[in-house]
Length: 525
Image 1 (cartoon, rainbow, N blue to C red):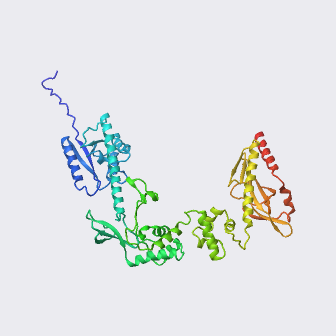
Image 2: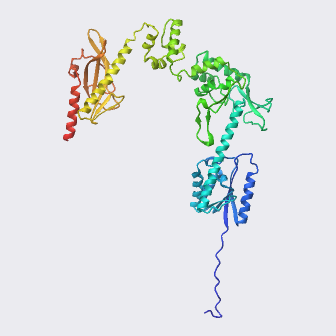
Image 3: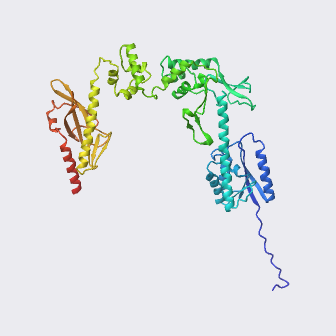
């Protein structure tokens, strides 16, 4: 019981902490001039009615909400949320779509979860639900996030359809036109208004942009590049070097390179065609190259500065390696070249044919000798050695395959490496196979070169000898490691070095014996 001289002790009142919040505002385009103000006003009204104090603002102006990487305002907000000394414990956002129109709805949920995990609540001020992690709120937010992402996809499709329609009408939808061309502003009746300088854009919605020839010196340079490539036979890399050496740079004031010259020669805008959608990067996805069937093309939309015949000749030369070999066209073209020139060789075929002399005809005929035979041309040089080498190559690899199969049937474990010419047995014995067509030198002397591999271990080197006319196996030389120094080319002549005869064997039965003996010793140990 309290006495008169004892004063009652007052209980201290717990101070009520005011709710501090940060607001996040985002607008998509510059045309939404009142969107940030409207969002801030709505957020301010919500904060006042709920006793919340706004202490900081994060804003992304004129930026899309498809990804996080291009939104510095939201990135700073998420970084500050993780800071333990932050001044707020709530984030106010106008609605779900302002938080982001992520194409993956889980990404929007993840960023909100990161805030909630560190004790920061996200409130959508204009939504008709309370973000209290209830089942209803979770389902409603998922629907709203999906709707926000679908809005971007539908808008992207509508914009793309509108751009394709304008391209088909002959209006330019690109940015910089490149060397020799300029952008011209026209009204809705296609009346010329004024040229557009770099980084200038139209200000009237009904105006359009077309391409017109640029300065005379740039037009002349474009035509000169085509003439060098088509009529002069100069390669793209030599054209780039010639222009750089003279101090003539491209439209971006940068040195020329082989890819920039190729793009100039392949661009149909110099022919007057308006081509669109060769590549696309929709909804901030990685850029992809589209198939030619998906390109949007308006033929003759602009004034051409290169003759169609010259442009077509450039395309034939640019794509001569990629077009492959057409049998009927190749035979007819090869025969016409022979009749006009009187002879055939690799140089005349490379210069006079649209198909490259070596690679293209190798795909069609297998070798140059077969190409000559197809039209009845008989060269002064003998090409029989080509057929001999091809036959020996086939017999050589079939012999190695047969040896590997024989060892496998004997219970061993062979494996082929190094273009299937290195045989390893039980990971213990390494045998390198190489083929030689013996060439006579003097009276019956046979000579060949031998180089022992120096970059990988080899226990035995098997030389497969092939005789000429007809091609057949003429015996084997089996050299153990140490006979020849690694990496050094050695000229071998068994007729002049009698000691080499001890390494000669008529067949490879001893190779199976060596492999089996190695396996037994390993097993005994």
